[in-house]
Image (cartoon, rainbow, N blue to C red; front, side, top):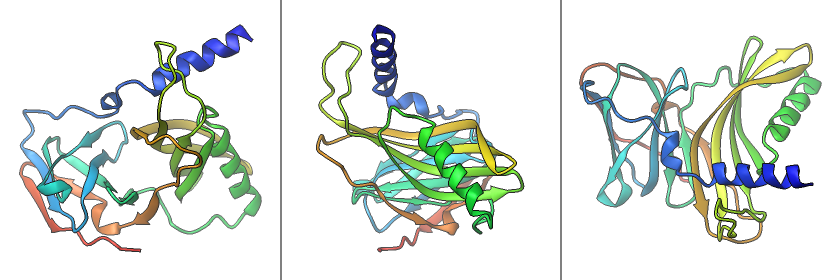
Amino acid sequence: MKRHFLFLFLLSATLCADPGRIYTAADPASPGGIEGRTPLPLTHALAVEHDRLHVYRAELADGGKSFTFSHLPTGKYDLVLISAGNAVFEGLMLGALSVDPDPASMQNLEKRVAVADSFFNRHAVCRTGLTGDQALVFVERIRDHLTLQQSGEKLNANVRRLEIIELARATDDWQMTTTRHIYREEIPLGPSPAFLRHFFVSTIGNIRVVDSMKQLGTVILPSN
């Protein structure tokens, strides 16, 4: 019992740590970047490099309606935009959008995602992509149970996290190989907070950055 409590305590301390550790620092030697505007105010604009090792957070301006990623290394990026209206718009290159024809395989995939992190008591699969024997799953997790801070005090908030999970197929089952957290924030305390409304926007994916600022102009986002 003591070991179990210690595990939860340490995990909660990690969970509530500075979310800035998720993000990669810009490289002052890299002249590339991405700029754009949205019709909706944003709370976060994230650029996920295709290898998923690096995630960058943009500077927001104009009340959250414009974003700038400065000093991005050369590469291809997918954007994830989180609006003040509790929606997430993403252009993540996850693989084929078609559903696996094997229902048992997809059920097992969902089970593996569900048990990958039991500290979060609720989750939603936003989107799944398949490439051969690899699956990439964009997942939102919420913890709305008691959470202790490192000080031992109760955290007066719920916690939301977004992540990309990579899984490898093993016959009709799956094994998680890696996961990349791309967003983690505290949200107001309350029972059963709603998941973010999710939208896939292909125009904010596969953006190539070389040695100049990529101008996206106004990004058209779905409204419902």
